[in-house]
Amino acid sequence: MSHQPQDGRPPTAGPAVPARPALARLVGDVDRFAEASWAREPLLRHTAKVAAGAAGFDDLLTERAVDELVSERGLRTPFLRVAKAGSTLPHGAFTAPGGLGAGIADQVSDDKLSALFAAGATLVLQGLHRVWPPVIDFCQQLAADFGHPVQANAYVTPPQNQGFDDHYDVHDVFVLQVAGRKKWSIHAPVLPSPLRDQPWTDHRDAVRRAAEREPVIEAVLEPGDVLYLPRGYLHSATALGGVTVHLTLGVHSWTRYAVAEELVALALQRLGDDEEARASLGLGTSLTGEELDLDLVGKRLRDALESIDPDEVAERLRSRRRDAQRAAPVGPLAQHALATSLTDDTAVRLRAHLEATLVQGTLTTRAGSVPVAGVPDAALERLLAGGAVTAADLGLDRARRLVEAGLVVAG
Image 1 (cartoon, helix red, strand yellow):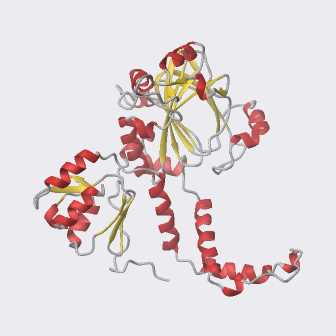
Image 2 (tube, rainbow, N blue to C red):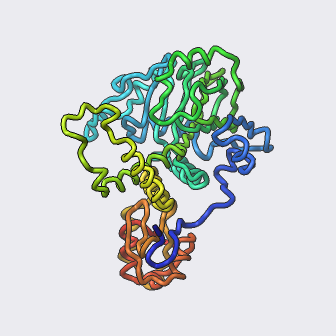
Image 3 (cartoon, rainbow, N blue to C red):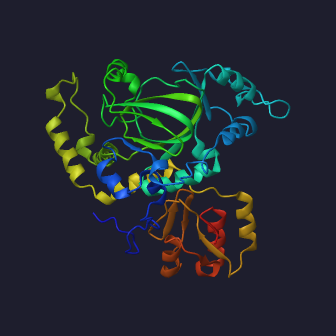
């Protein structure tokens, strides 16, 4: 079964980023990382020692930025968690109404946070890939480099304190030490490559026993250092000496299990069109193995699986990837001003991180879909490659529609 677009061209995914600059900043040699570390084993990189005068991660986050986020930005739950002695505190312990004109009850309270932090609580700023511009930009670059979605949290720990007990994550993790020094203890997995519905809390006893063994890594991270942990590796961290801040970048890998989910979903769609597969079991069935027609159902299911075009699976996964992250930020007022001022000579370009594909004359993206049939091939190819085109190249009315839909921005 063919899955080629009606115009005869394969789907276009937009510009590639062969250098992978965001990922290279974290791991150095990207090819070596892909071959030796990715999804296999931890990597500890003391970047301050690798490059003389390394600047650390002050461009992404600082202690001053943490104070600004919790005291001036009106953050609400769940953009902040607070933990103490290995447990997460209830929201009411660190939130309060915002006062006259902003009485929303779950706004972060800087007063409460100051007291909790002084008493040894760890602050967890969640979803920084949605609220802090430098982290938004870096995570989007990193997701483009990886091909897997990326999220960001920051952990702010008082001196000599541990925020969470030994545990594992169900996504890969990059730890970027921003400020202070933190001692990390890493242990081998009790469940290698766990899925998202296989959290460490399902294996508490095994995690506790594994954490008592010899660690595979025990190291102190200083500003500028990077630690990579594949999902499943146990970890805990303790602040040393002073306040510490680190960024945790979570990489939510697309897995073979996700491919299997889409294969099965497509196969079941096929069986839904099969009258014999839809047929009822016998009257008065007790649902014993002999009454389930497993030979027939199994054969039809295998036939359905073998009939599936790989491009169908790929498109379903691409659709899930579009939904997993957002495109680069865009300003509604700026877009309105651009749309109302368009002339034939106005330069526009594709909005970054749209996950754009061109299929059957429609430009499909994270921000929606717009028909582009009739636009010259050369203009579409230049646009999808990241280049600028003029409104006249797209047609003035269509260019305005693309601007208003948030698919193109000023070039």
